[in-house]
Length: 113
Length: 114
Image (cartoon, rainbow over all chains, first blue to last red; front, side, top):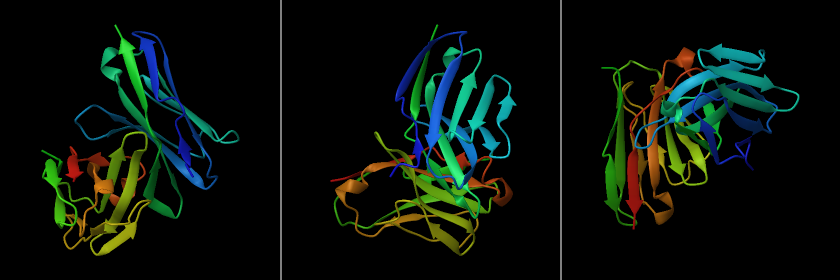
């Protein structure tokens, strides 16, 4: 039973345009969400996070939106750059089990010049 | 340089031959964790440790053991590896108060069990 779902395995975007990566979750106990980026042959690196008490968090070109009623979050990258080409993982954790992170399967973003 | 190191980076072994993948961090982090990455399955947590001598199961702990005797080290032990444990393994660490913000990942260990 997949608790964190990234239903788009891949996404292709033109440089300068907006990239929108989506993530859905099923467990209503999740109260903290994170996005990680992964380049080939490297470990994932933290990108941005959001608590369930917020609906938006912004860091430079990256913004994460959380819709609790829909159990949906999205990562917006504006403007997209070729260096953003990577696999993006959505992850979630729940209060009381903060050490346990549940990741989605990832979305491969390709930003074309 | 602050980092998480894993050894070996690549390992080919045979079914049933015990092996250990080491993980070490130099950031004095309380929290450490192991993940495996498989095609089509993403990252799945194997075990995690909130501090020395404190470990807990993640989502796929079967077939693995861990120990946390020192703060900096968190080895992953496969007592009797099987082909379904062929995977890319990542170790990660974080300050206890920042687990939910930022985990630092190692470069990965690619394990093949034949």
